[in-house]
Amino acid sequence: MSSAAPTLLTPGPLTTSLRTRQAMLQDWGSWDDSFNRLTASLCEQLLAIINGASSHHCVPLQGSGTFAVEAAIGTLVPRDGHVLVLINGAYGKRLAKICDVLGRRFSTFETAEDQPTTAADVERLLNADPGITHVALIHCETSTGILNPLLEIANVVAKQGKRLIIDAMSSFGALPVDAQETPFDALIAASGKCLEGVPGMGFVFARKDALAHAAGNSHSLAMDLHDQHTYMAKTGQWRFTPPTHVVAALHEALAQYNEQGGLPARHQRYTKNCQTLLDGMATLGIRSFVPAAIQAPIIVTFHAPKDPRYQFKDFYERVKAKGFILYPGKLTQVDTFRVGCIGHVTHADMQAAVNAVAQVLDEMQVLDI
Image (cartoon, rainbow, N blue to C red; front, side, top):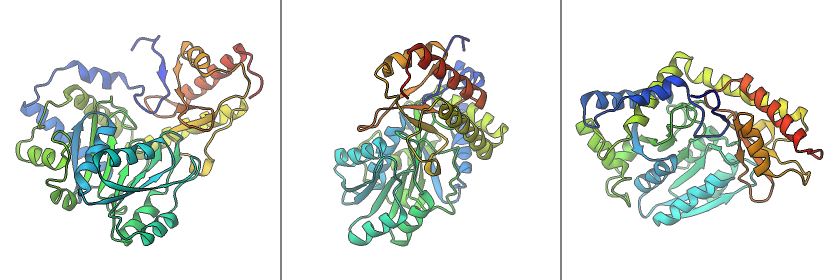
């Protein structure tokens, strides 16, 4: 990458390593044995991260993370199922919209964007409506950075005899989830997040018995995870043209992930990135939106300065000129901006970004923070 290329402090796509980018220089035949082995190795390594080889299948899918979420809902929720969608941000709302578009019956429970859903909430809702068959949860809500209590909610869902679908797009690979301790029918993630690959491939960890009983559920040929898994298990190949370069890049990113110490090391680096960011912004008087106790070390939402001289577009372009790309806010009621802590970056990069923000605010003469 050119030294002039900005660092992406975003929740994905994100800054990747040179080795990961170089892995995309080779072309692959989609039916070639070497590529089939690459796919099989990838799925095996992904399952190992959640200790899921004995209980779940890893089903890869072309497309963004949202493609994989839609595939999981469409495949694993029967057409007469009823999904309880837990919402405290934009991605929970997107999950509810997916249910609506697919014609799956759903109910929603929405908390404030800085308030996690609790296990007690879920237990009360399931007791009130025994017709609910599935619960859908965003583990780390990317629109704010809030962390929802996955294990506690998963245990309540299992105790009630219901099935859990987890959108772990922004947490998988950095926050620990053990499939033998956390009961779920599906956990969904993608290539371009905490594993530090490039975007273009989602994957679903589907409980083996749930997937086996999902034939005929899907609304879509391309997004039928049961059909995708059955075909791959039989032939070793993807049903339709795979994102070969994305697969190769993720395989290389996983090699680095393991060399660097796997999930504990990735979590530690992101946590240090996040704390450096929070501490640095606090010295500038910029407040984070989510309370520290429920802040995931993935992305941080900050309150925008109140000064009328602050305009996000100008702020964004000035910070970009200093080498860092930030994200706009995604809240409807509060003016915010977001800074990602993930990707091939260190705490030194985060401190440099804070310094850039300080310089830009001074240039813009923003005084009322």
